Image (cartoon, rainbow, N blue to C red):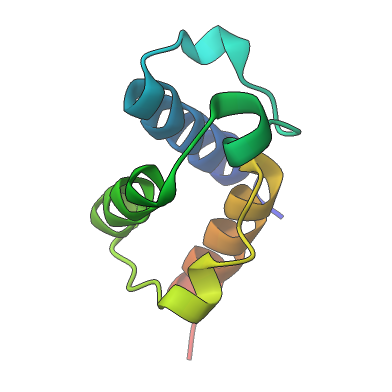
Length: 89
């Protein structure tokens, strides 16, 4: 796994989430839970999903987005989707 890619995805996810609720990105870790730690509501989740789609060129279905409750889960999801999209055919 390309650690630079993983780190870039992680930074982007953390920046989007931190900006969404107005906290410093340094307050977030891979274990940060959006609802429990950042008090995300449903609109925050929608905005985060839209930001992820724009940042990574993805289309994230509601069914895919629902279980993405932590920074780690989002990073793993984006890395898997972007790695498979970039893999040679």
